[in-house]
Image (cartoon, rainbow, N blue to C red; front, side, top):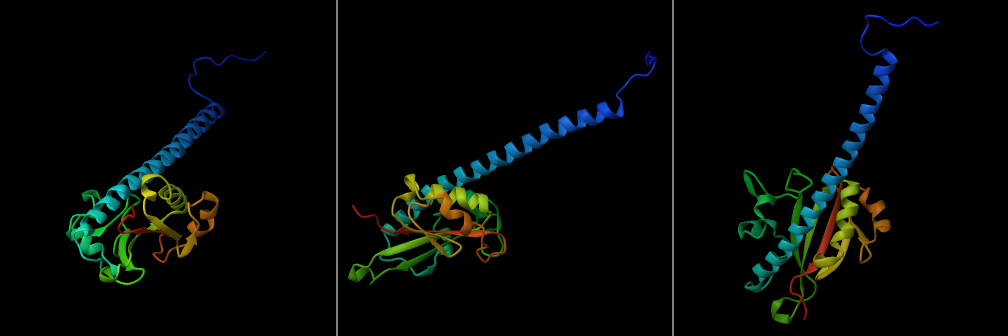
Length: 200
């Protein structure tokens, strides 16, 4: 016959280990879910900002005879084209994306190009938005979603860390390029090239 434990209250070490193990599993599940939820929210925020940027950049250049070639991020920041939450505090000409700030130069760069001729010869102007330093999971989600819906209006090319991606971007084609560092030392670069003036 077993002797009853009298006067001793509390958990045994085995019971305590089981309880801690269950609590650890529950907290781990919550942590994973919260991380995925935050990642999804950043992607949605970035896509919303992208729609605003496309409209603002095109509106700004309606009154301009042409678009400068090269980096135009500073010009557009001075013209208040970027939503205020994208501008780095204390450095209003450096633009960041929802995945965080990247030194130097920011997480988002805008450059302009002319495919052929200038405005006087009927040339077509393009601009490229480069999202720098994305982790592989963020890169795949953002590049795949940017190639469809309202953000695809006027989109002519997508490249990830220098690798051209077929249109529309398919998740399977993004895995390899999104795993390559884009030269920032912090992750992949997603470059989206758009026509400046939409054709009717």
